[in-house]
View 1: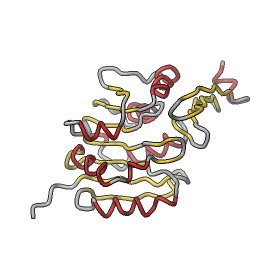
View 2: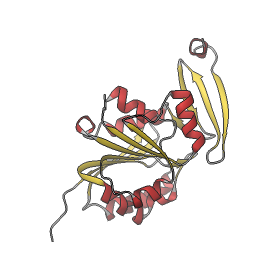
View 3: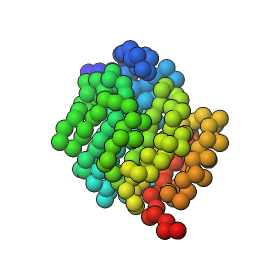
View 4: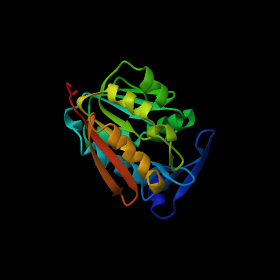
Length: 218
């Protein structure tokens, strides 16, 4: 009934998060989306942005994927339903309320092929010994990319956990003031990744897709 009525009159449930502020879960045009005060967090334009990024990778042949910033889990849905991905997914999310929204509103729960970890994504990439064929970086607080995403140290860790021939996808958002920082990362790691930069994806976001290059022997 809610889905039917949403075509006529959208309905919104508000949930408070200490990390992300007020989350809005809205039924609209037969679908549920999750928004913060200033941005779509899951199941709207963000889902389409990351789907575009995944289309530029080898997702069909990947066996494991790391998601840094699960949100409400729309990228998990995209992987499973649009790309028929059956490999292992590890998802890191700092906000326990967001994990609860993913589970209760969208049935995104840990199972044999999905491990959801409540924790700090930056600590995880520094400490893990695992390697992944695709790493998705989608780390926002409201509409802003977390500042540590532009640090050299963070990207050094990313280079160690992406397998050769694998991919990193970085959703750099839509803040034009961060262009210089983004270009600095691309320049600093051009020997590690073959980067492609896509601007105005879904008329909003800048997306970076990088293929991990073999180590250069000097």
